[in-house]
Image 1: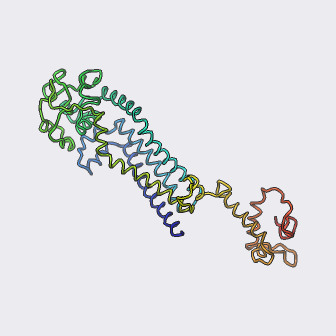
Image 2 (image 1 turned 180 degrees about the vertical axis):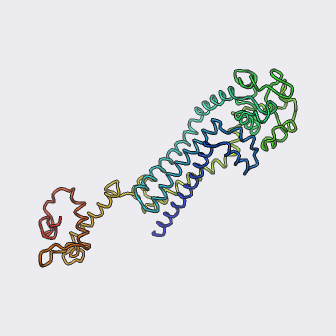
Image 3 (image 1 turned 180 degrees about the horizontal axis):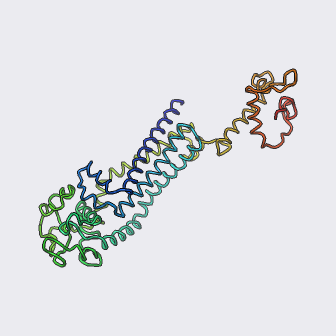
Length: 389
């Protein structure tokens, strides 16, 4: 059992320390993005195959700054929570461990609640998301391929083009989004351009067309899109060789096809939480068979039955020891040592363990009421052995 206890402590420390490092990395990235997003994207382009000129389009945009703020919040919470867990495990500080256990239980409950609401209220939030995205699409999308130079690409339009090419769809709600200025205001105003064609001669953006290979977009070679287009007159009226599916309907299908990583990530998070609770049960010596909730297990492992603070727990143990000593026979060594009588000159003995123990007992009994009659003859409050009380 002792080995199990030690292994549980080590496992909790390693797990928390790992998340402390992850929290620091996320926090540093968030601060970097907010302070100087341009240098962040330059560094990202240096260590990846992405074109820096394209990444710099997203620098200092509201979306990137908001993402940086979210990263700072997540990193701060992860760092503080797990540093409390590490410190509490190493020092065995009950207050820190109670705080850590409470917050982790709260996060676990929020995660489960979020998953339940995600599926139970899917019709409500999907409709709200579709409405919001459609409004953003109408007021911001102007198209990129064949309409503007790379340096003039709008980050939002580039992101929508990436969605349409990746998921092989056209428009948020289908190709009809580009048939009226009410559903595509920005595109009707500034985006209807393709080769020498402009305005009413253009029916669809180039991102809606079918391509034999989409590697040009993944490699940021946007000027080569015509080489991969099935029909180079696709955007012109009447449109040809384009996708009819709406992105609203295709994204859930793509997520369903790639659901394994999502499920695996969720299972890993829940498994780590179960593992943490298992470690706490080992510390509290509680098995899975007894019907005891995790909150009660955390209380048993990290607190005592009579109080909520460490001082009260220590005082409780001292009083129990005092009662144990008072009930000892007179010939027992601890009683004779701790209740040592005055010497022959009737002088009070000073120093040593008896005086230290008596001072400690006085300190915790000062706030108590008057002691009544004792059931132990000779050990009442007025008897010589207890005169120091």
